[in-house]
Amino acid sequence: MSADSPYESERSISKRSQNIWPYANEKATLKAIEQYISLKTSPNEKRKILSRLLISDEYFKLASETLLTSFHRMDGDTRHLILDNIIRLIMKGEDFTEYSTHIAKLMNDSNYKFREKATNLLLHMGEGAINATPRMISYLRSKLSDVQLSALKVLSSIGPACAQQALPKLKSFLTGTSHKELITACELAIKILNGKEKPLRPTIKIEGVVENPPKPQKNIEVEDTETPAKTNLYPGIKDKAILIAEDQDSVRVMISRAINSCGGHTKEMNDGRMVLKLIQAKADIDLFILDLMMPTVSGVEVLKTIRSNPQYELTPVMIVSARSERTIKLKLAQFDISAYISKPFRLTELLASINNILAQA
Picture 1 (tube, rainbow, N blue to C red):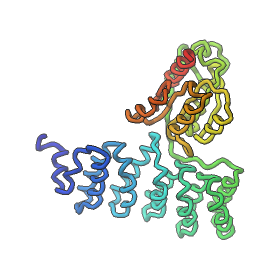
Picture 2 (tube, helix red, strand yellow):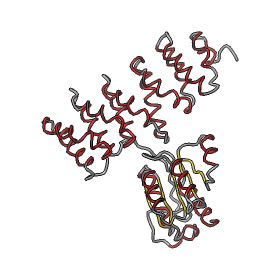
Picture 3 (cartoon, rainbow, N blue to C red):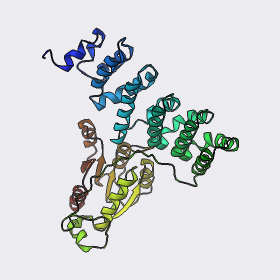
Picture 4 (cartoon, rainbow, N blue to C red):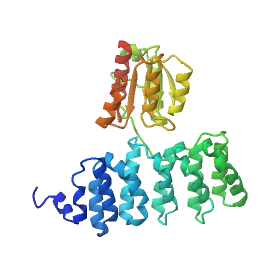
């Protein structure tokens, strides 16, 4: 390696950081993170090391808990780098719900930007952030109105799952505040926790579909379901019962509309637990379309249940996910999946794959 190599210069930062290169395995990666945390060097040098630790999403995920628990000892730029990377991975479909309590601590940070980012992360987790409920309740006593408002939003995103813990505190909070915005947010939270409104959804924009350029003569316009020519392009879909399990509303609705425009019949689910109930009810399904990262029960667990049920052991299953690692694809291969579509995808690609699967079934 040349003397001008950035890797070589970073290796010379400290003798204690030498074992970070290369990342041979999981154990070595975690050791590297521990060394990074304890490294007595300048913030700038730490950022250089961290920038290399972030080079692999898999290794960053392994190191997330250590990084979050040591968050208070890091400089501002490094904190932003870590949170931005977690947000990026969540937007790709990674699951960070097991770290919800660590992330919740950041909602009370002295830096508003950190508080805002932590709130967005928990909002996206939805019910998966239920372990953060006690801390959200404690934040209702904060002297900062934005922290109180964020706590109410997070509780609203968790939904009825936290009702038993949070409802008494919310009612007490409502009677003790005169802040109009907080009153409105608290009233909405109470309705949501009582099951009278849908849980609050995040403001993070997550796109999983790349729409095709407008070419009416060739492509399907999924908004118009009356054109007979559309169904002729994908005859295998017609009259088939297709279940779509996807927690991102925009993606799920778009897939459903496209299938319906081709004459298929869809059932939409936004979490894995709902799919398990449908399997238990022995509904007639011709094809399962599963996202891997879903609240309550993951797509992998749903797939295992499908294959263990005699009624569905031969039913085609298609995975549509932002996860593209070779390891996850190899893991799923044992369950005899029919197709693996990576996000972002084109609707024509998806429909063609569905058509081929159902035509051969």
